[in-house]
Length: 154
Image 1 (cartoon, rainbow, N blue to C red):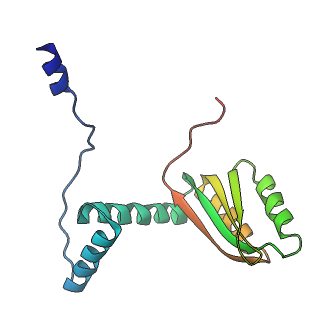
Image 2: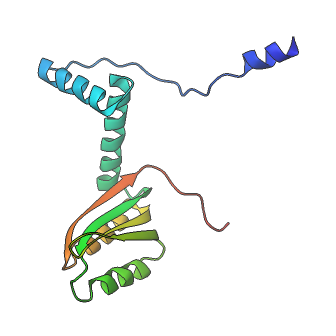
Image 3: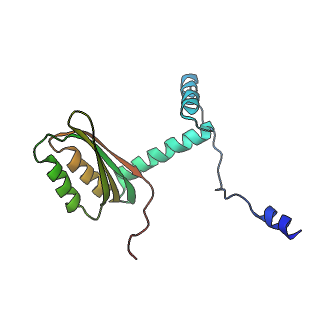
């Protein structure tokens, strides 16, 4: 009897949800349903939640200095003289925000580098801008998430 009582008390953790209703033009609903199926979302709600989270993070990035975690991903020409040293110097200069980095050599003297960053949104954006605009960087993108890593030291 006690075992069945314990089992009945164990409930999956669920966050409270609110239901809202939205109106969509037919073509937008068809496109949404197609994306839900193609990407493997369980429901329209899950897809819309994901899109809303991304937009809210983008809004925070533009309007607040909230601490966020993310990545700066760049593709660069590793034949550009001094570029790798400039990237390393920039990462060292921003040691508090650049947590880690990984680079992979690709075909055709191209390198992809991913930097794990954390800090105030505007500061991380400034770092991304500094890296992405270096001569020899082909393209780059900052991706932020509304989350934080646990402190390394107490």
